[in-house]
Length: 225
Image (cartoon, rainbow, N blue to C red; front, top):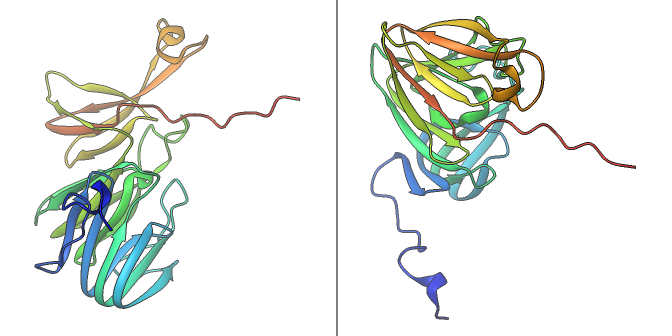
């Protein structure tokens, strides 16, 4: 068979090393040699000898309850082989976490990660009452973290002089050391939220960066009768 579909752009090549790589803009490939963790339902294909196990509790003390503020369950993938992960055709990115780093991320943006990363659920001050999620996932240790984002994310520097205000529906994550608090903007609420009332943002202050997706969460459509 011939055609653009079978060009080198789309053809999967054998993995050259274990671990996580970006297969294309919408998919992450993980060459498994041992164990890794992923969002349940995110595996779109695999080959080799792999086993999948739902995780509701900790793995060797590494995980607390494997559910984020968005109710995201995780699965462990074990064995030898390759697996591909994606979520709703969102863009995929890989974050390298080094010893001493700490990266806080919204659970809806977690796709997969190395089992060498430590993971905990943390309450985010000021984010709970606005629909952005009371809990976020905090990753530490050393390893790779695969994220998904609707569109290409913005990485905005935060400084003591210039705090950043982020819509809680748009925040993806932020670096260690940033303080968070709830910020209300009554006077501009109608402009920011498209209606009357109070606008609420998450204010981040200190030294670091915040990652923002270029879209807000869309409320579910109501059926018209």
